[in-house]
Image (cartoon, rainbow, N blue to C red; front, side, top):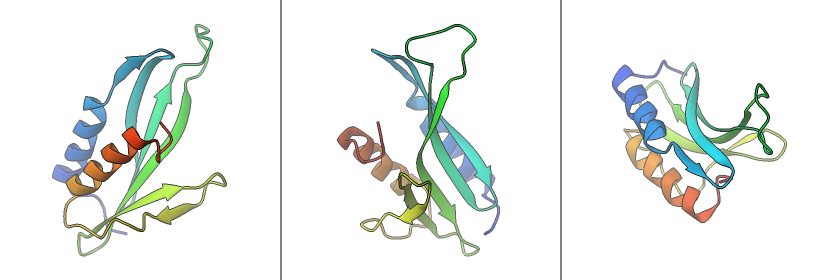
Length: 113
């Protein structure tokens, strides 16, 4: 796996920042965790019911992988923590179309929202 190009990492980070919101259970934040050519998008929520000082929950939502030739693929995680390629999404030369797929599926509930 190759390291993530800085411009593309910023695109992913901005996507996460724009999705921060407050719902009936409190604040919802999306953040990234990088490792090599992989960017895992996680959802963070405060504990429910809210307890000051308690740890926020962290749930992986999706993973974007960048190959050495800068092809991006989208992956989802099963209940055992194993990542699988999202079958309907072809590789892309940018993470942006894959982020659009995540957005569509977040509204449909596929990625765990």
